[in-house]
Length: 171
Image (cartoon, rainbow, N blue to C red; front, side, top):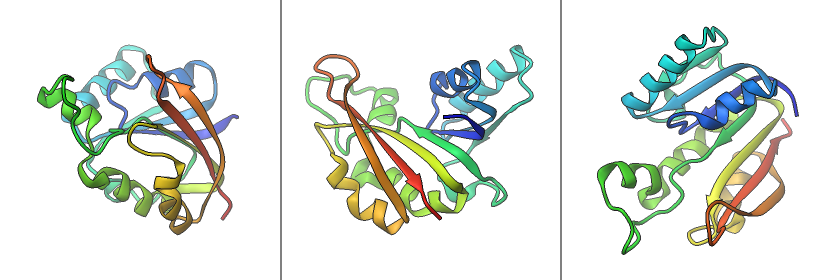
């Protein structure tokens, strides 16, 4: 899959997006994260590597991006559970990376994503089977006018509970 414009949402330090550039899977990369430190790290990485093909936004929610953005490829590794887990790290940084109370971040993404997608865009979302499945997102996918193409399972560290949904925008 090759695209002109890719977007990594909830990018953190942006390992995924910069890998897309490295592998020539996109010509321009848009990165967004609501945390200032993450956005600044992405800007520093782009500057240190003379990557003028990278745009970084420090925003909370897709609706705050310019309406002119249109992506051929959208990838995300958002907070993938709706509650903290007992016996796991509970620092504020751990919680912000892993917990999406009431799926509020996801609901915002599903509500606003269609307006930023180019026709036939590819969407890849990483989630965790301990907290959700493709059925969890079924009504949001339908409401967004997206089509679920496939689900790839057994990602992540042991016990490999991660899954990736591949969707497309047919409009």
